[in-house]
Amino acid sequence: LIMKAFVALTGLFSLLQLSHAADVAAPKFSVNLDAPPSERWNESVNYMISTYGFDHSYQNVLDYVYSYLPPPVVQKLEPLLLDLLREFPGEAGEEIKGIHQTITDLGYGDQISLGELTAINLMYEFTVFCTSIVAENSAGELFHGRNLDYSISGLQNLTAQIDFTRAGETVYKGTEFVGYVGLLTGMRPGGWSVSVDQRATYDFANATKKDSLSGLVENLVSAATGGSTLGMFLRNTLDTETSFADALDKLKKEKLIAPVYLTVAGTDHLEGAVITRNRLRPDQSHREGVWPLTEDDHFRLVTNYDHWDDVPEDDNRRDPANDCMNQYDFESLSLTGSIYDCLSTAPVLNKGTVYTTLMNPKQDFFETTIRNQNE
Image (cartoon, rainbow, N blue to C red; front, side, top):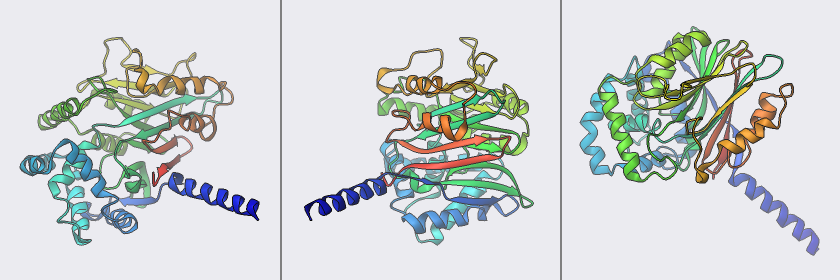
Protein backbone atom coordinates (compact mmCIF):
# COMPACT_ATOMS: atom_id res chain seq x y z
CA LEU A 1 0.00 0.00 0.00
CA ILE A 2 2.82 2.39 0.89
CA MET A 3 4.56 1.57 -2.40
CA LYS A 4 1.36 2.19 -4.38
CA ALA A 5 0.94 5.53 -2.67
CA PHE A 6 4.56 6.43 -3.41
CA VAL A 7 4.14 5.54 -7.09
CA ALA A 8 0.92 7.53 -7.29
CA LEU A 9 2.49 10.58 -5.68
CA THR A 10 5.54 10.31 -7.94
CA GLY A 11 3.29 10.21 -11.00
CA LEU A 12 1.28 13.18 -9.76
CA PHE A 13 4.48 15.14 -9.11
CA SER A 14 5.68 14.40 -12.65
CA LEU A 15 2.39 15.59 -14.10
CA LEU A 16 2.58 18.77 -12.06
CA GLN A 17 6.11 19.38 -13.31
CA LEU A 18 5.01 18.85 -16.90
CA SER A 19 2.02 21.16 -16.61
CA HIS A 20 4.21 23.80 -14.95
CA ALA A 21 6.70 24.04 -17.80
CA ALA A 22 5.43 22.11 -20.80
CA ASP A 23 6.47 22.53 -24.41
CA VAL A 24 3.45 22.90 -26.70
CA ALA A 25 2.86 23.67 -30.36
CA ALA A 26 2.04 27.33 -30.92
CA PRO A 27 -1.58 28.03 -31.89
CA LYS A 28 -1.95 28.81 -35.59
CA PHE A 29 -3.93 31.60 -37.24
CA SER A 30 -4.23 33.22 -40.64
CA VAL A 31 -3.97 36.94 -41.30
CA ASN A 32 -5.79 37.79 -44.53
CA LEU A 33 -3.91 40.62 -46.21
CA ASP A 34 -6.91 41.22 -48.46
CA ALA A 35 -9.06 42.06 -45.43
CA PRO A 36 -9.27 45.59 -44.00
CA PRO A 37 -6.22 46.17 -41.73
CA SER A 38 -8.47 46.91 -38.77
CA GLU A 39 -9.98 43.40 -38.93
CA ARG A 40 -6.95 41.19 -39.62
CA TRP A 41 -6.06 40.34 -36.03
CA ASN A 42 -9.58 39.96 -34.57
CA GLU A 43 -9.48 36.16 -34.30
CA SER A 44 -6.07 35.87 -32.69
CA VAL A 45 -6.61 38.74 -30.21
CA ASN A 46 -9.96 37.24 -29.20
CA TYR A 47 -8.30 33.86 -28.70
CA MET A 48 -5.50 35.16 -26.50
CA ILE A 49 -7.75 37.16 -24.19
CA SER A 50 -10.50 34.53 -24.00
CA THR A 51 -7.97 31.75 -23.34
CA TYR A 52 -5.60 33.46 -20.90
CA GLY A 53 -7.38 36.62 -19.78
CA PHE A 54 -6.13 40.17 -20.14
CA ASP A 55 -4.15 40.03 -16.87
CA HIS A 56 -2.12 37.03 -18.02
CA SER A 57 -1.47 38.30 -21.53
CA TYR A 58 -1.36 42.00 -22.34
CA GLN A 59 -1.11 43.16 -18.73
CA ASN A 60 2.17 41.24 -18.41
CA VAL A 61 3.62 43.25 -21.27
CA LEU A 62 2.28 46.53 -19.89
CA ASP A 63 3.93 45.81 -16.56
CA TYR A 64 7.20 45.31 -18.42
CA VAL A 65 6.81 48.66 -20.19
CA TYR A 66 6.07 50.29 -16.83
CA SER A 67 9.27 48.83 -15.36
CA TYR A 68 11.15 51.14 -17.75
CA LEU A 69 8.65 53.96 -18.11
CA PRO A 70 6.29 54.57 -15.16
CA PRO A 71 2.63 55.15 -16.14
CA PRO A 72 2.82 58.96 -15.70
CA VAL A 73 5.77 59.06 -18.12
CA VAL A 74 3.94 56.87 -20.64
CA GLN A 75 0.93 59.18 -20.38
CA LYS A 76 3.11 62.21 -21.14
CA LEU A 77 4.61 60.33 -24.11
CA GLU A 78 1.16 59.43 -25.50
CA PRO A 79 1.09 62.30 -28.07
CA LEU A 80 4.59 61.38 -29.30
CA LEU A 81 3.64 57.71 -29.52
CA LEU A 82 0.51 58.53 -31.52
CA ASP A 83 2.61 60.69 -33.85
CA LEU A 84 4.96 57.73 -34.35
CA LEU A 85 1.96 55.48 -34.97
CA ARG A 86 0.93 57.70 -37.88
CA GLU A 87 4.43 57.34 -39.32
CA PHE A 88 4.50 53.53 -39.18
CA PRO A 89 4.94 52.10 -42.69
CA GLY A 90 2.16 50.75 -44.86
CA GLU A 91 -0.89 49.52 -43.02
CA ALA A 92 0.86 48.79 -39.70
CA GLY A 93 -0.72 51.75 -37.93
CA GLU A 94 -4.22 50.73 -39.00
CA GLU A 95 -3.57 47.15 -37.85
CA ILE A 96 -2.51 48.41 -34.41
CA LYS A 97 -5.62 50.59 -34.21
CA GLY A 98 -7.72 47.55 -35.11
CA ILE A 99 -6.07 45.45 -32.41
CA HIS A 100 -6.78 48.16 -29.85
CA GLN A 101 -10.39 48.35 -30.99
CA THR A 102 -10.76 44.57 -30.57
CA ILE A 103 -9.31 44.80 -27.05
CA THR A 104 -11.76 47.65 -26.36
CA ASP A 105 -14.70 45.62 -27.69
CA LEU A 106 -13.73 42.83 -25.29
CA GLY A 107 -14.00 45.29 -22.39
CA TYR A 108 -10.33 46.11 -21.72
CA GLY A 109 -9.86 49.36 -23.60
CA ASP A 110 -9.61 51.30 -20.34
CA GLN A 111 -6.63 49.15 -19.28
CA ILE A 112 -4.42 49.82 -22.29
CA SER A 113 -4.29 52.97 -24.41
CA LEU A 114 -3.51 53.16 -28.10
CA GLY A 115 -0.24 54.89 -27.21
CA GLU A 116 0.68 52.08 -24.83
CA LEU A 117 -0.01 49.49 -27.53
CA THR A 118 2.23 51.53 -29.84
CA ALA A 119 4.96 51.50 -27.18
CA ILE A 120 4.64 47.73 -26.95
CA ASN A 121 5.25 47.52 -30.70
CA LEU A 122 8.54 49.37 -30.14
CA MET A 123 9.57 47.57 -26.95
CA TYR A 124 9.53 44.07 -28.47
CA GLU A 125 12.48 45.04 -30.65
CA PHE A 126 14.49 46.31 -27.74
CA THR A 127 15.53 43.61 -25.25
CA VAL A 128 15.41 40.28 -27.07
CA PHE A 129 17.89 37.61 -25.97
CA CYS A 130 18.16 34.99 -28.70
CA THR A 131 20.11 32.19 -30.35
CA SER A 132 19.92 31.70 -34.13
CA ILE A 133 21.50 28.98 -36.27
CA VAL A 134 21.72 28.61 -40.05
CA ALA A 135 23.23 25.39 -41.38
CA GLU A 136 23.58 23.23 -44.49
CA ASN A 137 24.08 19.46 -44.55
CA SER A 138 25.93 17.33 -47.07
CA ALA A 139 22.74 16.88 -49.12
CA GLY A 140 22.53 20.63 -49.63
CA GLU A 141 19.52 21.11 -47.35
CA LEU A 142 19.37 24.54 -45.66
CA PHE A 143 18.14 24.67 -42.06
CA HIS A 144 17.31 27.65 -39.88
CA GLY A 145 16.48 27.43 -36.20
CA ARG A 146 16.06 30.01 -33.46
CA ASN A 147 15.25 30.41 -29.78
CA LEU A 148 13.70 33.67 -28.68
CA ASP A 149 14.32 34.55 -25.03
CA TYR A 150 12.54 37.36 -23.27
CA SER A 151 12.27 38.52 -19.69
CA ILE A 152 8.51 39.23 -19.84
CA SER A 153 6.69 36.71 -17.68
CA GLY A 154 3.88 34.90 -19.47
CA LEU A 155 4.75 36.09 -22.97
CA GLN A 156 4.01 32.52 -24.08
CA ASN A 157 0.34 33.49 -23.69
CA LEU A 158 0.62 35.84 -26.68
CA THR A 159 2.74 33.61 -28.92
CA ALA A 160 1.24 32.29 -32.15
CA GLN A 161 2.23 31.01 -35.57
CA ILE A 162 0.73 33.12 -38.36
CA ASP A 163 0.14 32.46 -42.05
CA PHE A 164 -0.11 35.74 -43.94
CA THR A 165 -2.31 35.13 -46.97
CA ARG A 166 -3.33 36.97 -50.12
CA ALA A 167 -5.91 35.66 -52.61
CA GLY A 168 -6.15 32.52 -50.47
CA GLU A 169 -2.44 31.68 -50.80
CA THR A 170 0.25 31.90 -48.10
CA VAL A 171 2.71 34.69 -48.94
CA TYR A 172 4.85 34.41 -45.81
CA LYS A 173 4.77 32.95 -42.30
CA GLY A 174 5.89 34.16 -38.93
CA THR A 175 5.99 33.63 -35.20
CA GLU A 176 4.18 36.50 -33.54
CA PHE A 177 3.39 38.01 -30.19
CA VAL A 178 -0.23 38.83 -30.96
CA GLY A 179 -0.60 42.60 -30.65
CA TYR A 180 2.80 43.22 -32.22
CA VAL A 181 2.41 43.67 -35.97
CA GLY A 182 6.06 43.28 -36.95
CA LEU A 183 7.97 40.03 -37.30
CA LEU A 184 11.09 38.89 -35.46
CA THR A 185 10.95 35.39 -37.01
CA GLY A 186 9.62 34.75 -40.49
CA MET A 187 9.82 32.74 -43.70
CA ARG A 188 8.80 33.14 -47.32
CA PRO A 189 7.96 29.62 -48.57
CA GLY A 190 10.26 28.62 -51.42
CA GLY A 191 12.38 31.71 -50.84
CA TRP A 192 14.11 32.60 -47.61
CA SER A 193 13.82 32.91 -43.83
CA VAL A 194 15.03 35.39 -41.23
CA SER A 195 15.41 35.70 -37.46
CA VAL A 196 16.36 38.67 -35.29
CA ASP A 197 18.78 38.76 -32.36
CA GLN A 198 19.31 41.94 -30.38
CA ARG A 199 22.69 43.65 -30.68
CA ALA A 200 23.34 45.98 -27.76
CA THR A 201 25.79 48.86 -27.88
CA TYR A 202 26.42 48.57 -24.13
CA ASP A 203 27.48 45.77 -21.75
CA PHE A 204 24.48 43.59 -22.54
CA ALA A 205 24.81 40.99 -19.78
CA ASN A 206 25.37 43.55 -17.02
CA ALA A 207 23.12 46.30 -18.32
CA THR A 208 21.44 48.57 -15.81
CA LYS A 209 17.96 49.96 -16.26
CA LYS A 210 19.65 53.27 -17.14
CA ASP A 211 21.56 51.56 -19.96
CA SER A 212 18.39 49.99 -21.30
CA LEU A 213 16.42 53.23 -21.05
CA SER A 214 19.20 55.06 -22.87
CA GLY A 215 19.01 52.47 -25.65
CA LEU A 216 15.24 52.91 -25.86
CA VAL A 217 15.63 56.69 -26.20
CA GLU A 218 18.17 56.18 -29.01
CA ASN A 219 15.69 53.88 -30.77
CA LEU A 220 12.89 56.43 -30.43
CA VAL A 221 15.11 59.18 -31.83
CA SER A 222 16.10 56.93 -34.73
CA ALA A 223 12.44 56.10 -35.40
CA ALA A 224 11.54 59.80 -35.35
CA THR A 225 14.28 60.57 -37.91
CA GLY A 226 13.35 57.98 -40.49
CA GLY A 227 14.67 54.72 -39.09
CA SER A 228 12.56 51.65 -39.88
CA THR A 229 11.03 49.75 -37.00
CA LEU A 230 12.74 46.42 -37.39
CA GLY A 231 9.82 44.01 -37.20
CA MET A 232 7.72 46.01 -39.64
CA PHE A 233 10.65 46.29 -42.03
CA LEU A 234 11.20 42.53 -41.92
CA ARG A 235 7.51 41.85 -42.50
CA ASN A 236 7.54 44.17 -45.51
CA THR A 237 10.69 42.51 -46.84
CA LEU A 238 9.12 39.07 -46.52
CA ASP A 239 6.12 40.39 -48.42
CA THR A 240 8.10 41.91 -51.30
CA GLU A 241 11.34 39.95 -51.74
CA THR A 242 11.08 36.44 -53.13
CA SER A 243 14.74 35.31 -53.17
CA PHE A 244 17.59 35.01 -50.69
CA ALA A 245 19.85 37.29 -52.77
CA ASP A 246 17.30 40.09 -53.03
CA ALA A 247 16.38 39.80 -49.36
CA LEU A 248 20.03 39.85 -48.27
CA ASP A 249 20.65 42.98 -50.33
CA LYS A 250 17.67 44.78 -48.81
CA LEU A 251 18.48 43.67 -45.27
CA LYS A 252 21.94 45.24 -45.59
CA LYS A 253 20.77 48.66 -46.75
CA GLU A 254 17.73 49.84 -44.78
CA LYS A 255 18.18 52.40 -42.01
CA LEU A 256 16.97 50.68 -38.82
CA ILE A 257 15.98 52.06 -35.45
CA ALA A 258 18.33 49.70 -33.59
CA PRO A 259 21.51 47.65 -34.12
CA VAL A 260 20.70 44.01 -34.71
CA TYR A 261 21.84 40.58 -35.87
CA LEU A 262 19.90 39.12 -38.80
CA THR A 263 20.27 35.43 -39.54
CA VAL A 264 19.11 34.56 -43.05
CA ALA A 265 18.64 31.25 -44.89
CA GLY A 266 17.70 30.52 -48.50
CA THR A 267 17.06 27.44 -50.61
CA ASP A 268 20.31 26.84 -52.56
CA HIS A 269 23.88 25.83 -51.75
CA LEU A 270 25.60 28.20 -49.24
CA GLU A 271 22.58 30.50 -49.02
CA GLY A 272 23.01 31.30 -45.36
CA ALA A 273 24.51 34.21 -43.46
CA VAL A 274 24.54 36.28 -40.28
CA ILE A 275 24.41 40.06 -40.82
CA THR A 276 25.82 42.17 -37.98
CA ARG A 277 24.00 45.46 -38.41
CA ASN A 278 24.52 49.00 -37.19
CA ARG A 279 21.58 51.32 -37.62
CA LEU A 280 22.78 52.35 -41.09
CA ARG A 281 24.68 49.38 -42.52
CA PRO A 282 26.55 46.14 -41.72
CA ASP A 283 29.40 46.57 -39.23
CA GLN A 284 32.56 46.14 -41.26
CA SER A 285 34.94 46.99 -38.43
CA HIS A 286 36.22 43.40 -38.57
CA ARG A 287 35.37 42.87 -42.27
CA GLU A 288 32.70 40.34 -41.32
CA GLY A 289 29.53 42.41 -41.25
CA VAL A 290 28.05 39.72 -43.49
CA TRP A 291 29.23 36.31 -42.21
CA PRO A 292 28.24 33.67 -44.79
CA LEU A 293 28.29 29.92 -44.96
CA THR A 294 31.34 28.59 -46.82
CA GLU A 295 32.49 25.26 -48.21
CA ASP A 296 34.48 24.77 -44.99
CA ASP A 297 31.97 26.22 -42.50
CA HIS A 298 28.58 24.57 -42.82
CA PHE A 299 26.88 26.45 -40.00
CA ARG A 300 26.80 29.93 -38.50
CA LEU A 301 25.50 30.68 -35.03
CA VAL A 302 24.87 33.93 -33.19
CA THR A 303 23.47 34.90 -29.80
CA ASN A 304 23.63 38.55 -28.70
CA TYR A 305 27.32 39.32 -29.16
CA ASP A 306 29.53 40.06 -32.15
CA HIS A 307 30.89 36.75 -33.38
CA TRP A 308 34.41 38.20 -33.51
CA ASP A 309 34.33 39.05 -29.78
CA ASP A 310 34.34 36.88 -26.67
CA VAL A 311 31.07 36.39 -24.83
CA PRO A 312 30.69 37.28 -21.14
CA GLU A 313 30.98 34.39 -18.72
CA ASP A 314 27.62 35.16 -17.13
CA ASP A 315 25.76 34.89 -20.46
CA ASN A 316 27.60 32.27 -22.44
CA ARG A 317 25.01 30.56 -24.59
CA ARG A 318 27.19 30.69 -27.69
CA ASP A 319 29.94 28.25 -26.69
CA PRO A 320 27.56 25.47 -25.53
CA ALA A 321 25.54 25.90 -28.72
CA ASN A 322 28.67 25.72 -30.89
CA ASP A 323 29.93 22.70 -28.95
CA CYS A 324 26.60 20.97 -29.55
CA MET A 325 26.60 21.74 -33.27
CA ASN A 326 30.18 20.53 -33.64
CA GLN A 327 29.16 17.12 -32.28
CA TYR A 328 27.22 16.46 -35.48
CA ASP A 329 28.95 15.61 -38.73
CA PHE A 330 28.08 17.26 -42.03
CA GLU A 331 26.06 14.25 -43.19
CA SER A 332 23.85 13.75 -40.14
CA LEU A 333 22.80 17.36 -39.64
CA SER A 334 19.01 17.73 -39.54
CA LEU A 335 16.45 20.35 -38.56
CA THR A 336 14.15 18.46 -36.20
CA GLY A 337 17.05 16.39 -34.85
CA SER A 338 20.39 18.08 -34.32
CA ILE A 339 19.30 21.73 -34.72
CA TYR A 340 16.37 21.30 -32.35
CA ASP A 341 18.52 19.34 -29.90
CA CYS A 342 21.12 22.11 -29.76
CA LEU A 343 18.42 24.74 -29.24
CA SER A 344 17.08 22.56 -26.40
CA THR A 345 20.41 22.29 -24.57
CA ALA A 346 20.98 24.37 -21.43
CA PRO A 347 21.76 27.24 -21.24
CA VAL A 348 20.74 27.78 -24.87
CA LEU A 349 17.30 26.75 -23.67
CA ASN A 350 16.68 28.56 -20.41
CA LYS A 351 13.88 29.87 -18.23
CA GLY A 352 13.59 32.95 -20.42
CA THR A 353 13.07 31.00 -23.66
CA VAL A 354 9.61 31.81 -25.00
CA TYR A 355 9.68 29.79 -28.21
CA THR A 356 11.74 27.76 -30.66
CA THR A 357 11.08 28.02 -34.39
CA LEU A 358 12.44 25.64 -37.04
CA MET A 359 12.44 26.72 -40.71
CA ASN A 360 13.26 25.21 -44.08
CA PRO A 361 12.18 27.59 -46.85
CA LYS A 362 12.70 25.12 -49.69
CA GLN A 363 10.48 22.49 -48.08
CA ASP A 364 7.98 25.07 -46.76
CA PHE A 365 8.59 23.79 -43.23
CA PHE A 366 7.85 26.23 -40.43
CA GLU A 367 7.03 25.02 -36.92
CA THR A 368 7.03 26.89 -33.62
CA THR A 369 7.14 25.28 -30.20
CA ILE A 370 6.25 27.34 -27.12
CA ARG A 371 8.77 26.61 -24.36
CA ASN A 372 8.26 26.92 -20.61
CA GLN A 373 4.50 27.21 -20.98
CA ASN A 374 2.96 28.36 -17.67
CA GLU A 375 6.45 28.90 -16.24
